[in-house]
Each structure stands twice: as structure tokens, then as C-alpha cells.
Amino acid sequence: MTRFRVAVVGTGHIAEEAHLPAFAAEAGRTELVAAVDIDAERADSFAVRHGIPAAYTDLDAMLRRERPDLVVLCSPPAAHLDAALSSLRSGAWVWLEKPPFLSLAEFDLVEAAERQGGPYASVIFQQRSGSGLRRLVRQLDSGELGRPLVAQAVTTWYRSPEYYAVPWRGRWDTEGGGTTLGHGIHQMDLLLAVLGPWAEVRAMAARLERDMDVEDVSTALVRFESGALATVVNSALSRREESYLRFDFSEASVELRHLYGYGDADWTYTPERLRAVDGAEVRSSHTALLPGLLDAMDRKERPPLSGRNGGREALELVTALYQAAFTGATVRPTDLLPDNPFYQRLHGGVPEWARC
Image (tube, rainbow, N blue to C red; front, side, top):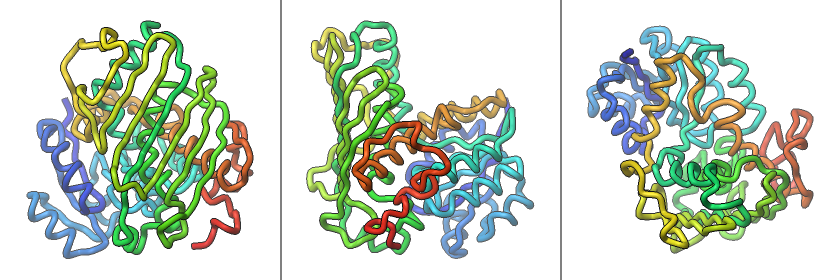
């Protein structure tokens, strides 16, 4: 079994609270060799605190000197494209935080830089890793739950004005989008994991409270290829925070209530007798997601949540929601082509929204 050399780019909260525990749990398969941050003091402090032997402010210098096998991108979204391309060209695989990129155009540039057998870039949708979701998908595939009919995906979170005072937040050119892209993308990704490909989207978005370029709320109606209908709500203004999914199948209703991660107890089945209890509980987390990436690296195979059938799916749905909301049109997958301005940037150049 290979032991992979890992570099962490971006040394903020998400790296410290989510990524370091994940790599500590896989210490037999990974070795942290470098930390990178544009703030030298922060990079040095992070490296010292966590016993990482080298700290850098320059990604390219780190790639030349350390030759990591895996680069973890925990930096703001606007920095992802160049860092991912540089890492892939150096031969390093990439594991990147959401939102992965600022547009489908950027996603496709990175996919084009991948090579058969690796390196690949994989997106961190850690909520895919929980045992509750995997059981639900197995039950749906077996036919036990019947066919999907109606669904809800609700991300009602609260982000204060101080949260958006951070210079790169709330801007199309640095964050990429608002609460739809930055927060709701997780529940929307789970919606896709269960219901599969979507067929059309209608939507609305608004700036109701926060003084910024992007939206602080959005809503959508989604029709899936199966015929199932779903509602989506994304909010950064909700004082009682919740992440909620509901799936109504012809034989059962299944609900998930949590905030930033879930366990088996957070799922509710009606009727209760249809709840599956096979296997051990796995809480959704970076720690639970990482082994799948390392396994793919060992096998030199495309990892989960990468490429057109992985990490791109959620960004496609987000893009469709923005286009539908900003134009009033119904959006279909065939609309999201390179000549579409929303393929290039999520505001689509719509004058009311494109200010930066």
C-alpha cells in the first residue's frame, strides 16, 4: 500500500478542523509534507502547530521542491483554478473544497488537464460519505421504496454581515456565487445522488438583507428525468439553521434533518419498518470521504466525485438555478454549453447581477 505525500494549500478553519483530522485518521497511508498560504506567518504557524516540515507562500515553489502526490485545496474559490492546473501538471492529484470552481468553464479546463490513470481532481462533497445516504440509494435501487415522486432540499443557514465582511466573500469574482453555490450545493448534491439526472429548472433569487454582489436567498423547482419533482430552498438569512431533505417515494417517505453533517439517527422513515439497519454507522465527514480517494490513487483510477459523472453534476444544477433565476427562463441541461454566458460565469453577465 502506497504512502502518499500530501500538501495542504490554505491554512484556515476548514483545513484545521476538517482536513487534519481526516489525514490523521489515515496516517498509515498519508504524510503531510507541506503547508501553503499567501500569509507567511499563518503558513509557518500552521506548520509548526501540526508538525508539518515545510511552509511556503508560493505554490509552484512547493510543487517543485516537495513533489507531493496529493494537493488539498482549502483556499478561497477564486484560487482553485490556477492551483488545480499547476498541481495536475506537476503530477499531483487534487482534492478540493467546494465550491470547486467559479464556473463550468473552469471545471472543464481542469478536467482537460487530467490524464488517464491520474492525476485527477476530486471535489469534497463530504455529505456523500454517510452510511444513511448509501443505504437509501441501495433501497431505492432495489425497488423497495417504489419510484420517486416528490422531494425537498432545504438549506436554511444564517450568515451574519460580519461573515460577509471578509474581502473575498459575497463577490462573483472571488467567491463565485452566493448561498446557492457556497451553502446549498451540499443538499443539492445529495438530491442528485438520490434522484439522478435533472431535466429542467425554474428559479428565483434575491438580495434581501446582505449588501453584496451575490444572492442571499434562492428557490427553485426541479423536474428530474424520472418525472419526480423537487423544491429547493437556499438561505443565508435563517436564524433557526437546518439542512433538510425529504423524499416521497410511492412506498415510503424518507427525511433527513441535520446541519453540517449527519448520522444514521438523523434519518426518519415512514413507515418505520422500511428503515434499513444493515452495516455499521458512518457519519458524513471529510474523514469518511478520504479513504475512497486514497483507494482510487492506489488503483490509479478516477476517484469518486470527479469528472462529468461526479463533481460536475452539482455545479451544473447550481448553474441552471442561477440562469433560471436571473433570466426567468426554464433551463435544461442542453442549455449549459460553452456559448452560454452562464457556462462562463454564474451571473451570466446579467446587468442587475454582474456587478463586482
